[in-house]
Length: 198
View 1 (cartoon, rainbow, N blue to C red):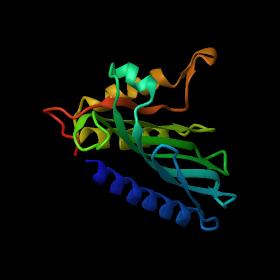
View 2 (spheres, rainbow, N blue to C red):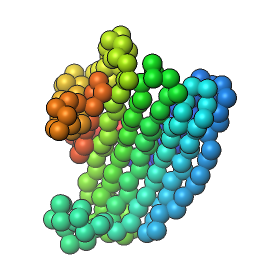
View 3 (cartoon, rainbow, N blue to C red):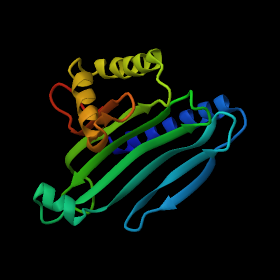
């Protein structure tokens, strides 16, 4: 699954960036490769000062190594190794009539040994949300319908569950409001008999 996910996020990054450059018409993404001390790295892309986009980033990562102490404690293991990959994006428009969008999707594998051959545990996490400056109801309805359609392909129970998690996760207590029009949030979504990792 790890190799399939890496290929998927590389292709998705290309598709998203190509489409955003077409929409903007002026600005192009700047590319930056980076390495993680301890294993792996990523590829960041930033677009800025365009006709449509003030600034945005579409980034992928593929990192691996020994489990940090915090995660070892969470999973109650003495030692372990991991691989994690993901795609994250934040796009800020020039016009206040266009919303900001955020999305992050990740996949995690946990191993007992440093060879990282036998997967001990695996899960997906992530989410997406939309923050309009001026609310157009049809945009919010469309955004949520697209998310629901994507979720429904894998189970009718997912959209309501992930929407609720987003509403709770991104709730701003001191302002008594959620972030934007909400979206989806999920973590520790493991394959099971009903849904495979693929």
